[in-house]
Amino acid sequence: MQRNPFILVYLFFAAVIFMVVNESFQAPGYHQPDPIKLRDLDSIVADDTLHVVMGYNSVNYFVYKGTPMGYQYEMVQQLCSEHGWFLDLHVTNDVEKAFQYVAFGDCDLLAMELTVAQNRYPRIVFTNSLYSMRSLLVQKIDSNGNIPVKTLADLDGKKIVIPRKTIYRRQLQHLADSMGIKIEIIGEMSLGTEDLTTRWPNRATPSSISVCLFRSPNPLRGLLIVNR
Image (cartoon, rainbow, N blue to C red; front, side):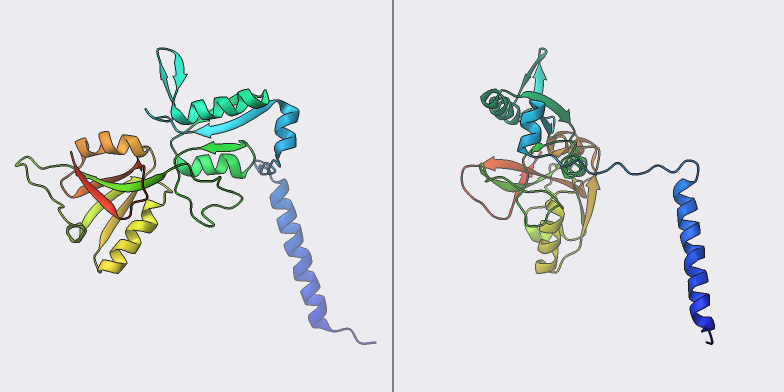
């Protein structure tokens, strides 16, 4: 029986590829990724601990004279108290990192003000909404008292700074496409939403604008322009 040389060649290359990949996994310095932790309600009950990640700001979580306070913090504390759980708190203003904490099982709950969006992040499920919010566009008035942006059309050619990995990027891109204008969107990793409204306008150029959210009792649409 005559052997097909092409089959032998394919088998040879397959064997070589397997050897190379296998050696790379065993090479010095290679770190096997940590497996995803699968946690559910039974796991939380068994541990008597609820692992929560939330942002640090003057509304949802802050420490005043050594005492933790805040809207989201008090809600989570009440939840733990009702079930007899301990609270293990992780704090970050990086939304991307907060999502990762939950998606990979390091935390059970993400307590932040987030816009509900379908398929926003893999393995993440939103609770029912607590309140409605509206986007704010915060800008710095120049030294002559002039307001750079008075209407949405004035955003053409401007730089807009937003918290990294937030829903603002999608909103601004939709706004730019619908109005036929160009907006340069800058994702700021080191600052949270609240910090953008206070710190960024003080060090921004007249062409730089920050975006934030505020709670509203009624569902509102569009961007509200605020001057600082």
